[in-house]
Each structure stands twice: as C-alpha cells, then as structure tokens.
Length: 370
Image (cartoon, rainbow, N blue to C red; front, side, top):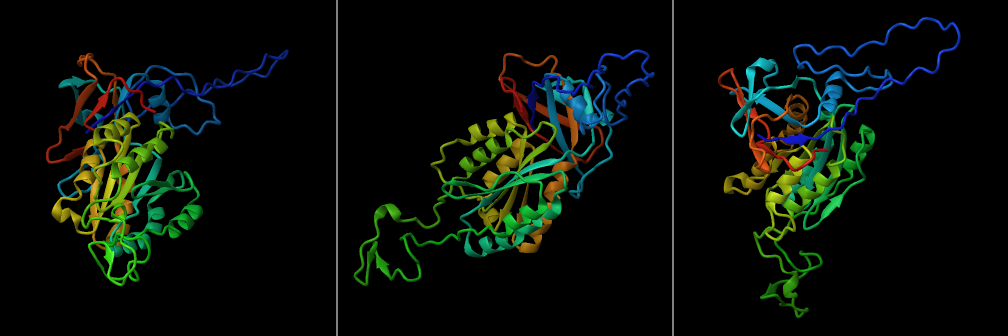
C-alpha cells in the first residue's frame, strides 16, 4: 500500500473571459457548468467552468483542483487474481496512522500511462534472447494516449530516445534493442578465443588477466537500485493526471555497491507517485533472487510477475498495463493523524470479503508529489 501527498495548485483551466461587449450584443447562452460526478466521484466544492479547448476529464480536473490530498491508486483482485471493477465508494475504508479518513474523491476512470520500460542488460544468454524477442509485444498493451521510454541498465543506466506516444516509433526502437548476454568469463575480448587460463595466466603464453577485470562467478555486477532511481527521475515531470509506472524486466540480481540505497529509491518513487511492476525472467525466483523486484512492487503499490518463456512474457505486458490503467483512485485530506511524523502508514480495506487490495503503504508528509 502507500501514497503520496499532493500539494496541488488550483490548475483548472479557467474559461477565457469574453471581450468587452459591443453595443447591442447578441444574447449569449449561459456557460455550461462542469458535469457533476456520478457514483464514481465524490462531491466537491463548485469550480469555474472549463474551457472547451481543454481535453481534461472531469476526474482529472477535480483531482487537480483539490489541495493537500493524499491520492491512492488501488488495485483490487479476487481469489483467482482477476481484477474486481465493480466496487463502490461506500465499500472502501481508508486509515491514515490508524485513523479512519473520509474520502473526498473516488473514481474508477481509467488514466493514461507514462511508462519507463527498464530492461536488464546483463541477462543470461537464453533469457536475454527471450526478452529481446518479446519486447515489441509491449506496444500491444498500450493505448494511443499512453507514452513509453525504453531504457537499459547493467553497471550503468542507459536511457533511450525519450518518451513517445508514437507506436510505430516505439515498435522500431524496441526491435532495435540488443542486450548484452551475461557470461562467466572476465577477460576483455572474445571469451571463445581468449584461450585457457590458470589463475589469470594465459596458458598459451599470452598476458595475464588483470585482477581488476575479473568477474567473479555468480556475483551480481549490475546496479538495479541506481537504475530504478534514474527511471524515477525520468517520470518525475510527467503529468499528475497520468499513471506513472516502471516496467522492471530483470532476473533480480543486484550489486552491493549501488550509489542509491533501497530506502532512498523507494522514497523517490513514493514522492512522485510511481509504481514498479516487476517482470522476473529465468528461474531466479527459486533461489530468492527476485526479492528486490518483489520489494519494489510491494512498497510502491505495483505487482510482480514471472516468466520462463517468451509467450508468457508477452502476455504479461498486457496484464501489467491493464492493471496499472484500471485502478480505483481514492483521495482524502488527512484528518486526525500524527502531524509530527514524516512518514504516515496507510491501510485500505473493503467491506466485501475475500478480496486482495494492492496499493502503496504510506507517504512522506514533507514531500510534494508531482
């Protein structure tokens, strides 16, 4: 579960004022008022009418208008893992610092996505090939209003060409992604032509392998935490009326020398209202190497899936986008919680039994969400 405080300025676009009236002007019909939300939204104070040129939806407009809101995207699944789309506002209960809150906003409206596709560039040979061949299927889960940014990571972060809504350009970029396969050979050059070595000394008489270039077998050599941090920075400036997610496609291995700690990265993700959806490849989940993916998903209100085959990975792309786009959005102004605390735990419950609730677990009151 979790959240972020939105200190949101009043961003509703005001209808342009009419120019000074000419003599004997034609009578103008009254400006249309904003349609009142149905069951999917809570009543709010009256707002200025929107300009017809603005594509902003009622839900997005209302969300922007309210200030000091805690906003919770919430996924609800049944016991079989299917999404539950028919809950009402009255069936939800929200607790902030164990104090029940009154919801001031509720909608089931789908939001467009801003997604960073973050791909592990140091996978084992077969896993690397599987991911490469599956990537173009990501576009199948995106709508015309969604945008995506393709990035890779190993010991460094490798950003792509930027966010795009153009699906043809995205398909082209995904098809051109080439991942570096992981090997257990440390010397520079081609591992198949380097010759046999003993203790780093080339048996055929070549130079010794420098100690600094050796890669210890089974020791992670990729900065997963740093990559997620960089992806969060890319998403930080995307609109508040969009769902911001990271597709983290990885075997879950993570080096110990990341510049950014896990806690630092999670704080950034919560600050910008970003959810991580982990897509684990290979069989690493058998030896707990997916723990990092699970932790990011759990702490940011995302989810984690596992794939050992290309076709299953392709299917998961659509499942992730469907889940991320079709969430309940709950919001409230905190009342009665402990104002002296920096971090506030949040719990969401539903009155209907047997359902699984997925959302962020808390928020930092000192941070302003974007």
